[in-house]
Image (cartoon, rainbow over all chains, first blue to last red; front, side):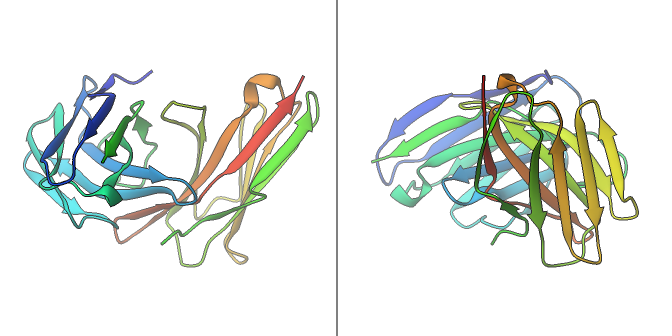
Length: 116
Length: 110
């Protein structure tokens, strides 16, 4: 399995609180991604990174911010969590080469986030 | 919005039978990938097929891509109980976009 660790694995918090999820990789891969998975929707891309300090928005980026200060860490922040952000969040990585979304992605085991 | 749509949504077969899942999409793609997800786990990459390829094999897996029909299929031959999982297609586009379908839930009965 690719060396991807997501933390925390489970979190319950209240509406309006800030939440930060962490993704740590040991593979030295260039690209990192954050997805959310909801029933009936498959996975939807939130943000992705193509290098240190280089990030871009995905399909459902509103209400989320990201940061990547080191190759190995990609943080997802919900500045003021809402109940609609209750979901399972997955981090993924892929190697450099032909570009983002053109290579296989390797996923972490997810963070289950509940916002009450 | 989803790009790929899998069909069927759920499939139940006996061990040893073949399982076929289909994926349709709407816009031009650079590549199409298939992933498997076991309950409570992350997705595992199975096969990537590029838009200029028509068929790829990996062990008991066969993937076809028909860009004229904007569709792909995943065939799992001689299925095993361990193949029980959800299977997702994901389309990659040149505009740095990747969209997953809602998945097919496969159950293989021993």
